[in-house]
Structure formats: C-alpha cells, structure tokens
Length: 130
Image (cartoon, rainbow, N blue to C red; front, side, top):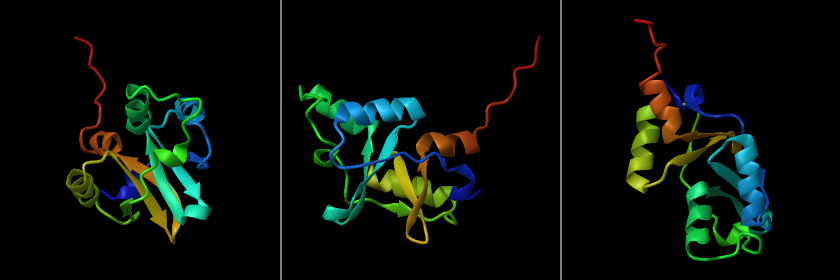
C-alpha cells in the first residue's frame, strides 16, 4: 500500500503568527493532529503538532501569546505519494516523529500519520454479534 492511499487530504495550513491557542482550536475543529505552517519569510513549510502545543503548555507558556513559528519544526522530512507505507514508517521511526507532510510536485498534498498507517495495516473489523 502507498502513502497516497493512507494519507489524509484534510490539510490544515496556518501562518507563523497564529497563536498556539488558535492553532489548537483549528486542529481540534478539523480533527487533525498536525498543521502545516507556511512561512514564506522563513523559507517554506514546517509542521506544528499537538505534541508541540502540549510541550509549550507543559512548560507554562501562554498559548494566547506563543506563536506557531516558535514551536514549528522546520527541518521536515517529506514523503512522496508513491512511497510505500513501510518507507513512511521507517522514516518516522528513524526521525522519532508521528507525522509526515506529503508533497506532490513540491506542494503539500496531505499528511500521513502513524495512525493512518496503523489503520491500513490493521483495519477495524466489524463485530459479529454472538
């Protein structure tokens, strides 16, 4: 199975000046665990995850004043739609992260997460009544 078959195409893109509270609200509304941060002034695309927000709040930082750019991972590993899920899982395991931005012709086409991969590898089977 390929990344294109597993990735979410519901992509949330935010700007670098969004507050962490704004980012969290948008992520919650879209039911996604990561947002693509587009910052043309800093040279491109980064990713902000739920874990980044959690770490900031855990440090006592104010989610109403902390900006996405301060918590964005900019050294991003990108996946291609034609990668196998094994390649994506290997990249995640090697890098220690749970989300990959999928680029198609240089543009974000989706995000694939560990949860997406697990869903493909171990689909939930309907319960049969006893």
